[in-house]
Amino acid sequence: MFPSWVNEYVGLPWKELGRDRDGIDCWGLFRLVLKEQFQCDLPSYDGIGFVSSAGREEEESLGRFMAGELTTWRRVEEAKSGDGILLRIKGQPIHVGVVIAPGWMLHIDKSINSVVERYDGLQWTRRLLGIYRHHSMA
Image (cartoon, rainbow, N blue to C red):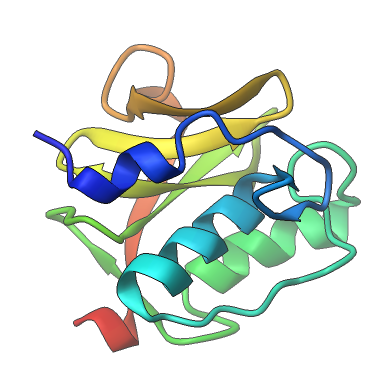
């Protein structure tokens, strides 16, 4: 059902501003997966904690980034493995996950280690702002 590589990322510990397997936040996980599995190198945004400590300007920058204003992303209707999912938390576009299969994402939050969850389920469907594909993954 899921690509075999997914197991390498499940259970990674959450760490604010983390960018490696010792501790990682949602952007760090998204960036790590895209780099290792899809050869897509994204900026690290060191110093920006998208979920827990971001200021309003930083929160909005993630939404603009994924929406294509800061780099080349395009919104897609049909998700495929490696696409980014932009989610709203507390009304702001500040959380990302990576599609691993249609309806399923890998993500991490400060209250949990990295997990696989449905993005079209009750917890996330109302928070889903869009699914985006990087231009290098056309």
